[in-house]
Image 1: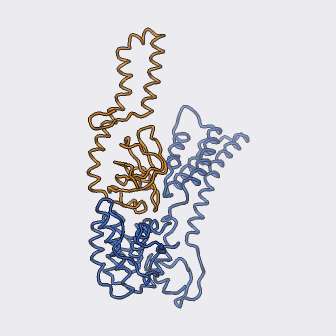
Image 2: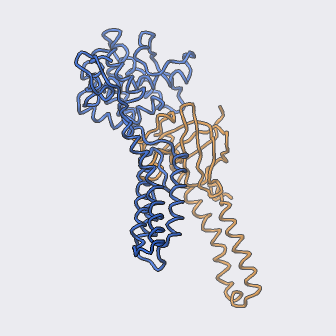
Image 3: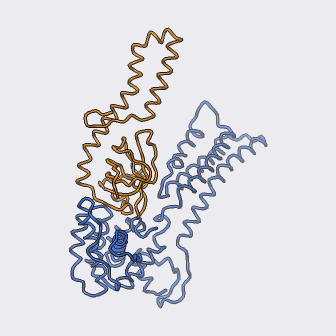
Length: 303
Length: 166
């Protein structure tokens, strides 16, 4: 892994390269570290905490009763409340929200904290702990893994692609990089007219084969935005990436040129190329702005 | 049932409620003289169970019918993959195949529409003009919203869903 790669990463994410924690300026020794390890590990611990806290509360209440220890049942019941809050947090950080799991703290407060005529019993706590565990299993099976944004932006194929593109392109004028970022943001917002105007402005006069790739990307986006104005227009771009542009593309172009699928892949490639160009060569303010669109870029990348 | 140009549909649930309460009223009026004495207002109330859903459906259908031309003019054709949370509030047009249909019996159908790029939920808060079923190829006009108003993944608040031939 070269130090150039690290420099690119430092520029993209404004911090030290997390892929190689210890690497010297000559790009020599490094220790590989999986950046999402801690986050995933913490989530795993939080998942374990749900049954541990809820059933732990039940166990404490049972022990107190068996040993005739005078213990207010609300203390062990707080384990169920804490487990509910953790479950709600785990459900909230997922891209698809499980509204049932998110609302469990409300029920925990009603059952265990709000004073009511019916007293809190061990059986209620036990049934509640079972319900929380079932909900945890349910949302793990039905609502998938946690958000890729929360999981870390500095990993995965898109991250590798940005770094690779930065090295391959070498340099892009800051104003073009800034426009690349603006076009990507406008496109993500569905502001196709403004995106088309800006992309059209940058789609002319490539200086060389390297700069030809971003210019083609601008042209493809301008073509798409112009075409999707009219009802039921075929979404075929006017320009295509050339075989020389292949090193700069994220998705491999399908063999069937001129089809809907081909133009869809070309558009995804164009957007991802502009995202990569902006993330590497644009100013810090714009990179900061672009980071909030990382989920959209990941979606285009097919994650 | 057609009121003016609007084809009004009553949900199965509303009809079921009407039937259940009609049977209840019949049985209780046979056995209870007090209920029989109150039939003069109980029968209109019973019919209101049917009339209110019809009126609500007419109102929502006519409102959606007025909105459709506006969306046809403003909506952009997008692939499902391009719909993202930054587009909340934007009118869009998508084309795809209906993979699943939910809650049709409530007159609040929800469709899972797929194209080659992905799938998206299409929520409709009234009954659609066409009877849309699984495997139909459809054109959807609507607005991008979040699934739970302020949070959740982007879904389409459908104004019009029509079967198209492809």
